[in-house]
Length: 255
Image (cartoon, rainbow, N blue to C red):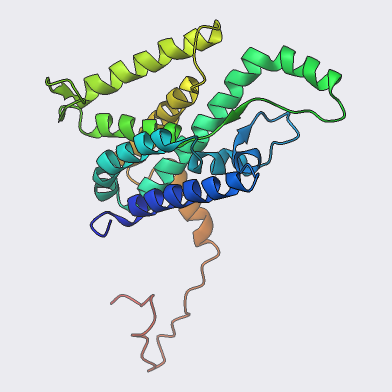
């Protein structure tokens, strides 16, 4: 843990601590996912913080192990490449974006059924739709790794043939898409496949934005913002007739 970058290490510890806390609370009859898991936005159990907190909850040991193993393998490379601020922004954007995509899919799939349930149970509406897990953010990490290092060979467990990172990401995304479509027609599982794709989608959009900003230098929006804020900056007034030394000022008269 000491050799890992700060954000990667913090993500691992946060998920492990929350998982252990959740296990203890379950024994006491308290479901942490009922408060912090991502519910459908029309449910009474939905809260504004859930699109952020849901990504730190996991269903079981296998669930958290797979997600944190992927973080351990790929996140340090990205954080060292970008720096901790940009990596943290990317991780959170992918995780929150994955939750928003899952909400949109629920709206398209279940809104008529949920409306009927709400009318029948107006006194207390229990929504069975809950999403937990860091998988959306993890899939964003996988996408970024394939984007930045497309030709790096990856070895999949039990497959002795190396696969390029770009090809690995494409195959994985295709599998998630077909699995997600299967869940739409009723032949799927209880995995939020569209949340995984949502993490990739928001990661792709953020990477495109960063590339746009990089290609255009300070970018037009940043330039306009700097022009706006410069109007409110106060500079020390310089008096050419004074012998006062202005060397300590951040703005000096040029000779």
